[in-house]
Length: 259
Image (cartoon, rainbow, N blue to C red; front, side, top):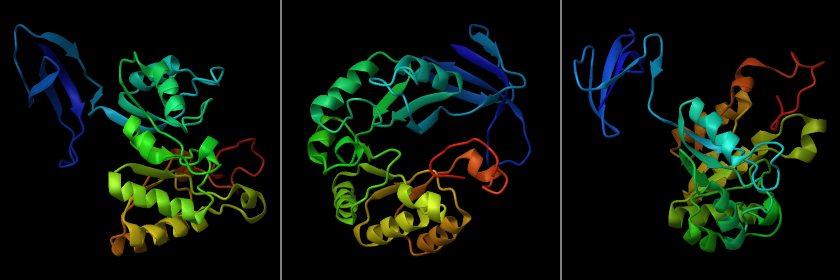
Protein backbone atom coordinates (compact mmCIF):
# COMPACT_ATOMS: atom_id res chain seq x y z
CA UNK A 1 0.00 0.00 0.00
CA UNK A 2 0.98 3.61 -0.57
CA UNK A 3 -0.17 6.60 1.50
CA UNK A 4 0.28 10.13 0.16
CA UNK A 5 0.04 12.59 3.05
CA UNK A 6 -0.94 16.28 3.17
CA UNK A 7 -1.34 16.83 -0.56
CA UNK A 8 -3.22 19.79 -2.01
CA UNK A 9 -5.97 18.03 -3.93
CA UNK A 10 -7.54 19.76 -6.93
CA UNK A 11 -11.30 19.92 -6.28
CA UNK A 12 -13.29 22.31 -8.48
CA UNK A 13 -16.34 21.89 -6.22
CA UNK A 14 -14.66 23.79 -3.37
CA UNK A 15 -13.24 27.30 -3.43
CA UNK A 16 -11.11 26.75 -0.31
CA UNK A 17 -8.02 24.57 -0.39
CA UNK A 18 -7.74 21.63 2.02
CA UNK A 19 -4.95 19.09 2.36
CA UNK A 20 -5.85 15.44 1.94
CA UNK A 21 -4.33 12.02 2.45
CA UNK A 22 -4.66 9.52 -0.41
CA UNK A 23 -4.48 5.76 0.17
CA UNK A 24 -3.51 3.62 -2.83
CA UNK A 25 -3.56 -0.17 -2.99
CA UNK A 26 -2.12 -2.02 -5.98
CA UNK A 27 -2.37 1.08 -8.16
CA UNK A 28 -5.99 1.81 -7.21
CA UNK A 29 -7.10 4.77 -5.06
CA UNK A 30 -8.94 3.24 -2.10
CA UNK A 31 -9.62 6.27 0.08
CA UNK A 32 -9.25 10.06 0.14
CA UNK A 33 -9.71 11.88 3.45
CA UNK A 34 -8.29 14.70 5.53
CA UNK A 35 -6.54 12.14 7.72
CA UNK A 36 -5.84 8.47 7.01
CA UNK A 37 -3.90 6.16 9.32
CA UNK A 38 -2.43 2.99 7.83
CA UNK A 39 0.50 1.43 9.65
CA UNK A 40 1.58 -0.93 6.87
CA UNK A 41 1.65 1.64 4.03
CA UNK A 42 4.68 3.28 2.49
CA UNK A 43 4.33 7.03 3.08
CA UNK A 44 5.05 9.89 0.69
CA UNK A 45 5.02 13.32 2.35
CA UNK A 46 3.39 15.71 -0.14
CA UNK A 47 3.15 18.91 1.91
CA UNK A 48 3.23 21.88 -0.47
CA UNK A 49 2.61 19.66 -3.50
CA UNK A 50 -0.52 19.37 -5.62
CA UNK A 51 -2.12 16.00 -6.36
CA UNK A 52 -3.93 15.83 -9.69
CA UNK A 53 -5.24 13.05 -11.93
CA UNK A 54 -2.80 11.83 -14.55
CA UNK A 55 -2.59 14.44 -17.32
CA UNK A 56 -3.35 13.48 -20.92
CA UNK A 57 -1.35 15.55 -23.42
CA UNK A 58 -2.96 15.16 -26.87
CA UNK A 59 -0.32 17.07 -28.85
CA UNK A 60 3.30 15.99 -28.40
CA UNK A 61 6.24 16.13 -30.82
CA UNK A 62 8.38 13.07 -30.11
CA UNK A 63 10.16 13.47 -33.50
CA UNK A 64 11.56 9.93 -33.58
CA UNK A 65 12.27 8.44 -36.06
CA UNK A 66 13.91 10.95 -38.35
CA UNK A 67 14.50 14.04 -36.20
CA UNK A 68 16.26 12.70 -33.13
CA UNK A 69 18.36 15.86 -32.73
CA UNK A 70 15.13 17.64 -31.76
CA UNK A 71 13.57 14.99 -29.50
CA UNK A 72 13.43 11.25 -28.96
CA UNK A 73 10.74 8.99 -27.57
CA UNK A 74 12.83 8.48 -24.43
CA UNK A 75 13.51 12.18 -23.76
CA UNK A 76 9.94 13.22 -24.56
CA UNK A 77 8.39 10.53 -22.39
CA UNK A 78 10.69 11.33 -19.47
CA UNK A 79 9.82 15.02 -19.72
CA UNK A 80 6.13 14.18 -19.83
CA UNK A 81 6.38 11.84 -16.86
CA UNK A 82 8.19 14.44 -14.74
CA UNK A 83 5.32 16.85 -15.41
CA UNK A 84 2.55 14.47 -14.36
CA UNK A 85 1.57 13.29 -17.84
CA UNK A 86 0.47 9.65 -17.88
CA UNK A 87 -0.81 9.45 -21.48
CA UNK A 88 0.19 11.33 -24.61
CA UNK A 89 -0.53 11.40 -28.31
CA UNK A 90 2.44 11.87 -30.64
CA UNK A 91 2.08 13.96 -33.78
CA UNK A 92 2.90 12.49 -37.22
CA UNK A 93 5.77 14.93 -37.92
CA UNK A 94 8.38 12.18 -38.11
CA UNK A 95 10.22 10.47 -40.96
CA UNK A 96 8.77 8.37 -42.40
CA UNK A 97 5.39 9.97 -41.87
CA UNK A 98 2.80 7.49 -40.53
CA UNK A 99 0.67 7.75 -43.66
CA UNK A 100 0.60 4.03 -44.42
CA UNK A 101 0.17 0.92 -42.30
CA UNK A 102 3.81 -0.03 -42.84
CA UNK A 103 5.05 3.39 -41.73
CA UNK A 104 2.65 3.45 -38.79
CA UNK A 105 3.96 0.14 -37.44
CA UNK A 106 7.54 1.30 -37.97
CA UNK A 107 6.97 4.49 -35.98
CA UNK A 108 5.18 2.51 -33.27
CA UNK A 109 8.18 0.20 -32.94
CA UNK A 110 10.07 3.05 -31.25
CA UNK A 111 7.29 3.38 -28.65
CA UNK A 112 7.05 -0.23 -27.50
CA UNK A 113 8.73 0.17 -24.10
CA UNK A 114 7.59 3.38 -22.39
CA UNK A 115 6.65 4.02 -18.77
CA UNK A 116 3.48 5.88 -19.78
CA UNK A 117 0.84 5.29 -22.44
CA UNK A 118 1.83 6.60 -25.88
CA UNK A 119 -0.65 6.89 -28.75
CA UNK A 120 0.46 7.65 -32.29
CA UNK A 121 -1.63 9.84 -34.59
CA UNK A 122 -1.60 9.37 -38.36
CA UNK A 123 -1.65 12.05 -41.02
CA UNK A 124 -4.81 12.92 -42.92
CA UNK A 125 -2.87 13.47 -46.13
CA UNK A 126 0.17 11.70 -47.53
CA UNK A 127 3.31 13.18 -45.97
CA UNK A 128 1.03 15.78 -44.28
CA UNK A 129 -0.03 17.56 -47.47
CA UNK A 130 -0.51 15.18 -50.42
CA UNK A 131 -3.37 12.95 -51.49
CA UNK A 132 -5.71 11.36 -48.97
CA UNK A 133 -4.41 8.45 -46.94
CA UNK A 134 -6.30 5.19 -46.51
CA UNK A 135 -7.82 6.12 -43.15
CA UNK A 136 -9.70 2.83 -42.82
CA UNK A 137 -6.49 0.79 -43.02
CA UNK A 138 -4.73 3.09 -40.55
CA UNK A 139 -7.68 2.94 -38.16
CA UNK A 140 -7.72 -0.85 -38.31
CA UNK A 141 -3.96 -0.80 -37.63
CA UNK A 142 -4.61 1.09 -34.37
CA UNK A 143 -4.68 4.84 -34.99
CA UNK A 144 -7.57 6.76 -33.39
CA UNK A 145 -6.35 10.31 -34.13
CA UNK A 146 -5.84 11.86 -37.58
CA UNK A 147 -4.09 15.19 -38.09
CA UNK A 148 -1.67 16.98 -40.39
CA UNK A 149 -0.01 18.41 -37.26
CA UNK A 150 1.36 21.87 -38.16
CA UNK A 151 -0.38 22.07 -41.53
CA UNK A 152 -4.07 22.61 -42.26
CA UNK A 153 -6.17 20.30 -44.40
CA UNK A 154 -6.06 22.29 -47.65
CA UNK A 155 -8.84 20.75 -49.69
CA UNK A 156 -12.43 21.21 -48.57
CA UNK A 157 -13.32 17.80 -49.97
CA UNK A 158 -10.62 16.12 -47.87
CA UNK A 159 -11.84 17.81 -44.71
CA UNK A 160 -15.43 16.82 -45.35
CA UNK A 161 -14.41 13.23 -46.13
CA UNK A 162 -12.31 12.78 -42.99
CA UNK A 163 -15.10 14.25 -40.85
CA UNK A 164 -17.53 11.72 -42.36
CA UNK A 165 -15.00 8.99 -41.56
CA UNK A 166 -14.78 10.34 -38.01
CA UNK A 167 -18.53 10.17 -37.61
CA UNK A 168 -18.56 6.56 -38.78
CA UNK A 169 -15.67 5.34 -36.61
CA UNK A 170 -15.32 7.79 -33.71
CA UNK A 171 -11.73 8.79 -34.53
CA UNK A 172 -10.61 12.30 -33.61
CA UNK A 173 -9.81 14.78 -36.40
CA UNK A 174 -7.34 17.38 -35.08
CA UNK A 175 -7.04 20.46 -37.30
CA UNK A 176 -4.26 23.06 -37.42
CA UNK A 177 -6.26 26.22 -38.29
CA UNK A 178 -3.90 28.38 -40.31
CA UNK A 179 -3.25 29.41 -43.92
CA UNK A 180 0.55 29.77 -43.83
CA UNK A 181 0.97 31.52 -47.20
CA UNK A 182 -1.33 34.34 -46.09
CA UNK A 183 -0.20 34.87 -42.50
CA UNK A 184 2.81 37.04 -43.29
CA UNK A 185 0.86 39.43 -45.52
CA UNK A 186 -2.62 39.37 -43.93
CA UNK A 187 -1.87 38.45 -40.34
CA UNK A 188 -3.32 35.47 -38.53
CA UNK A 189 -5.86 33.73 -40.77
CA UNK A 190 -7.01 30.91 -38.49
CA UNK A 191 -10.61 32.18 -38.63
CA UNK A 192 -10.96 31.14 -42.25
CA UNK A 193 -10.06 27.53 -41.50
CA UNK A 194 -12.10 27.42 -38.29
CA UNK A 195 -15.22 28.72 -40.03
CA UNK A 196 -14.89 26.21 -42.86
CA UNK A 197 -14.39 23.25 -40.55
CA UNK A 198 -17.15 24.15 -38.12
CA UNK A 199 -19.67 24.86 -40.88
CA UNK A 200 -18.84 21.52 -42.52
CA UNK A 201 -19.21 19.74 -39.22
CA UNK A 202 -22.57 21.33 -38.55
CA UNK A 203 -23.89 19.01 -41.25
CA UNK A 204 -21.57 16.06 -40.63
CA UNK A 205 -21.16 15.75 -36.86
CA UNK A 206 -17.70 14.18 -36.68
CA UNK A 207 -15.25 14.52 -33.78
CA UNK A 208 -13.56 17.79 -34.74
CA UNK A 209 -10.78 19.18 -32.54
CA UNK A 210 -9.36 22.65 -33.26
CA UNK A 211 -5.79 22.97 -32.05
CA UNK A 212 -4.07 25.95 -30.38
CA UNK A 213 -6.69 28.68 -30.96
CA UNK A 214 -4.87 32.02 -30.89
CA UNK A 215 -7.40 34.79 -31.62
CA UNK A 216 -10.14 36.27 -29.45
CA UNK A 217 -12.23 36.68 -32.60
CA UNK A 218 -12.07 32.91 -33.09
CA UNK A 219 -13.67 32.37 -29.71
CA UNK A 220 -16.45 34.81 -30.61
CA UNK A 221 -17.38 32.65 -33.60
CA UNK A 222 -16.99 29.44 -31.64
CA UNK A 223 -19.32 30.68 -28.91
CA UNK A 224 -22.02 31.14 -31.54
CA UNK A 225 -21.27 27.68 -32.94
CA UNK A 226 -21.53 26.19 -29.45
CA UNK A 227 -24.97 27.78 -29.02
CA UNK A 228 -26.02 25.94 -32.19
CA UNK A 229 -24.71 22.72 -30.59
CA UNK A 230 -22.19 22.06 -33.36
CA UNK A 231 -19.78 19.32 -32.33
CA UNK A 232 -16.17 20.42 -31.71
CA UNK A 233 -13.53 20.80 -29.02
CA UNK A 234 -10.75 23.37 -28.80
CA UNK A 235 -7.44 24.01 -27.07
CA UNK A 236 -5.05 26.92 -26.73
CA UNK A 237 -1.53 27.62 -25.40
CA UNK A 238 -0.16 29.92 -22.66
CA UNK A 239 1.63 32.29 -25.04
CA UNK A 240 -1.65 33.17 -26.76
CA UNK A 241 -3.00 34.32 -23.40
CA UNK A 242 -0.07 36.50 -22.36
CA UNK A 243 1.52 37.86 -25.56
CA UNK A 244 0.44 39.93 -28.57
CA UNK A 245 2.11 40.72 -31.88
CA UNK A 246 2.39 44.39 -30.84
CA UNK A 247 4.29 43.46 -27.70
CA UNK A 248 6.72 41.25 -29.62
CA UNK A 249 7.35 43.42 -32.68
CA UNK A 250 11.11 43.40 -32.07
CA UNK A 251 11.29 39.88 -30.73
CA UNK A 252 12.86 36.85 -32.36
CA UNK A 253 10.12 34.29 -32.00
CA UNK A 254 8.49 31.83 -34.34
CA UNK A 255 5.39 29.82 -33.48
CA UNK A 256 2.55 28.46 -35.56
CA UNK A 257 -0.07 29.84 -35.64
CA UNK A 258 1.66 33.21 -35.08
CA UNK A 259 1.13 35.39 -32.00
